Image: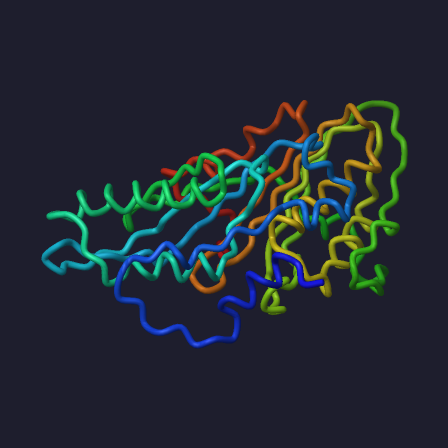
Length: 300
């Protein structure tokens, strides 16, 4: 049976889309989160995490009523508690419909009109509150996640052997310590593949946890490498990583997972999930501030 994601893909994937001349919200496609969550025992009505999905559309452009074009970074976010996500190609086509559309007598007025239209369309589509802002081209880049350390610093690259490239949670191993310890870890070579296009997506994973259990770094590297032949949306990969770590830690432990994917088609998606008792959610910093341009490395 064809699922909702397949139906969404068939609407645009591999098909010619004529140059878009006017604003058109009919391009937008919503995909339900439950399709993937149910496979990993994530209860949609009782999520084991809080979090947000942050999107950056680097090529948003429109015009004033007198034909003066402008281009901005559009940054938006919405809660992981929403029932749906927006399919990325549909969002790209929708935003492209603003390119030749004219709004307002000035750039400032046009931006405000576009913001209100997009906010309403996405909030209606996803049945949740969507926050967004246009970030000026001159905005200073805000550094985030500077306290995280590269996982590979804990691993001997000559000894480790990677053999599984389909998600393999059985690779994860823990050892017990005498007290709670904090761990800030990052892996900059995460690769997964789009469920719709089957094209590769690259990202950086950031993992914080506080626990008496220590997830051995070599097995964590092996696990993250096992996504290399998986086919999932970015939000799903983040939740899968979170859920697998959540399952092997203690129920009261703090856990945070954020994945910053690189842009494809001018858009990137940066989901973050954290335990409801996590005291370090401030480490997301300016990533969740839609008025700030935040990045960790040259990839963002």
